[in-house]
Image (cartoon, rainbow over all chains, first blue to last red; front, side, top):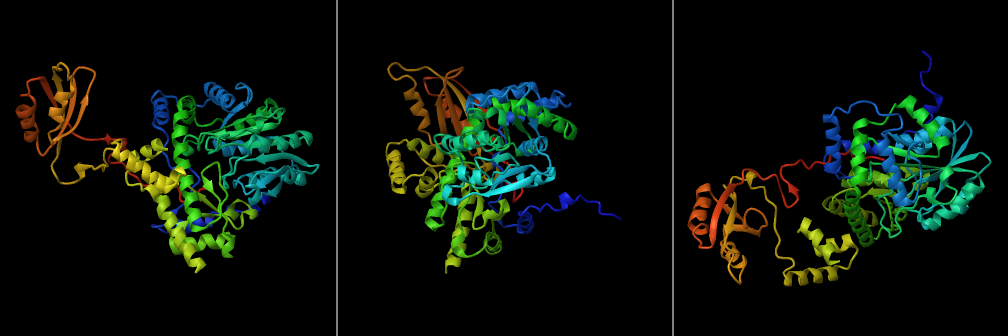
Length: 388
Length: 160
């Protein structure tokens, strides 16, 4: 029999967290701080709306791009909150989670050999999605001393004649970093000058903990026409299992993305779309309630790290902290493995998000304070042992 | 900062000043001082534990009694409310706008005990015009806490 598999696919590295997942699954008393999704249930008014749509028999496909009312509400919401203006009729597409949006955006824009700049550490899907299109990922190693923000110098160094797309993902999973308007402006200037498109993954936009909050690069002058905004309902409204995201893109790109989406997916789940209308119209108070709670947990973890003496820059977004463990002379993988085996505490090694995550851990604070307390006492005991 | 402390304590009175200080990014001593001050001012009136008594064998009956009263000149409803809430078996008393005046929550060992309180003590007060006793069959949710829900974390242990 000949090899049934694609060479491109088999050459893609499997996700680095798989190994940990397998070990944790067999440890019933392990505490995990490795989850990248909210611990809240979806707010009831949103679930009710989903249930109601099922009762009314709204169980058919929607249009490929998604319900017009939902697209309209999304565009109004983005305009109101972030001064980002896309036309709901031609520039908005409902996707199966933000992940599909990223995949479809890359496929719509890349030809084999096109280079995509991916600042790391970053979410695990960007690199393989680029590889699947035949594009060439070019990674940038973001620096702890820059608080994991992308600097204009780093970007300029990575650009070649073949660079077509920059993936910008702030607030960041795994680092919790955000970029202010002032940080984004020089990046936008470079993109315009070098004629580069931006995929701006803003899935954590609602979870920021500074006065300025989230800023979208698409709001800067001249960036609308070269930015694809990716967002969704998973993190903001605790709706991960509903699998609903969206992409906002200039019409030229949105049309081609919709074409791929139409052939691959048909449309995003109908029930989720009806529920999401309630989320986006009436969910601001839910976002605020959850955001406040995350912020308390964030403060709690940072205070505890300070007491333990674990260095960590202050993350102002998402629900992760990214402490540095270089002092212990263990690799991220070794540290995480030992922590899991000795103290039954699971965290994700920074290397799962790119080689430059070496020396760091991603710790999620989407957990109750009681869980975090227990986890931190285990972490503290482990570190005491390491330090002797 | 005081409102932050109150909101946290209202949802979990077990939180220590150290926890609260960490959670709101404040100084522990300052939080402890604020709590003490609010206890003195009776802003914080007590600390409770939510218990689902249905899960324990002890018999317990809760009743809501709708009470209509004649307010008294110069004292309004306060005097009559006081005469009612001072009874130990009365757990809560609210002045209401609506079809009756006072909502009185009672807790007793048996229906008989609760009924006896109503006709012996409540109904005989001269300003009480009428009472209507409603018994609680099951408590689903109290103080924002849903009873009898599974609290197991159903998320996968590791998610990128």
